Length: 473
Image (cartoon, rainbow, N blue to C red; front, side):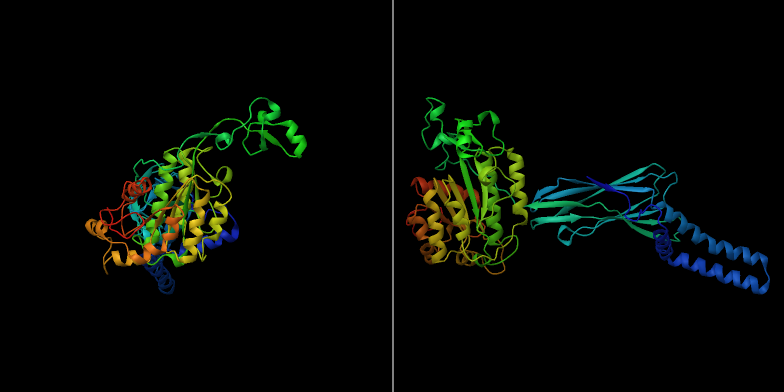
């Protein structure tokens, strides 16, 4: 919820007051200027002709718009506005509602008000509301909806209020200083609960090695990590190594999963909500949420070697944070992720080769011979690796010109080009489970197919075996 008074509330500086008075006089409407001009003309004529009654009429005509200006000039300090956004994070194509509230904190009623909120073009038309007279101490509440098919972070505000006097002599526009931000995240698709290699549960650092637990001398220490219990400090090792060391203890640890998103500009063709890159971003978001919900400790990694900042140890989130917070942090990152200018996957490979990363789920764009070889080497230290490859040739062949998503029947029967299969052959030979994604194919169907291909139960129909060209089942 954002709130605040008008930005012009400067507290009485003399130069600011002069500027405010000039701004208020510039707000005179055509009616107000006409009254003022008529009053001045009447006063001049009264002086020339010596008519006292005409002078009184002229003064009345001239003073009325000036009084309206003075009243509106003081009103700017006595109106408060606030904005409430529900929810502040929405998937693409979903709506959020913005609630606006105006409070008259003065002792005098207001005149006619026009309320306007500034929103980006992609969220829809600029909302405008006309508020009738607001009594002293009263308030008015209005709301409007925003929606975007493009992910991103969009500012809302500042809120603008146009004040008008009852006689229509003056109109002033005041802006409030508060802003809000609407985060439009990728659409998340519910995925089926299939079993992937590397999902087995384990315990602590002892899951991959046997720890000697016979006595304190046999305890294998490790370096202190932020958040470790100080009661686990191993003082003998600390003195030996000159840095704080803690005992390795048998404690539950979640299985790990790395979701790799290829963002290379050269790897994708097309733009817009139905482009291959947006499908990959949505797929990565769906995989992240699904694996977090299944109890995995998850890391989001891009081809640049960067992971989501502010996460737990080694860049993984979920083991020490609440699942909702971890998912929200990654969704915010995916909401603004764009194309990188990198030409290869070497940076992400350098991150992955540092240790056993558990399950690896990758969303690749076009892979040439060199990048396919780099991607194949990522599999060596992973418990399992699943690749969804969005080949440009497949997407170009799968969508007719001038059409959006292909019909369901066409998607399910589209044949994978032989050239695309040849490009991903190094991944299959390295042990990857590879699926070449046709345009608009639901990730849930591909998720099931990946499990069937991994277990050898057949992800392809008759006439096509895993690793060869065939139709989608």
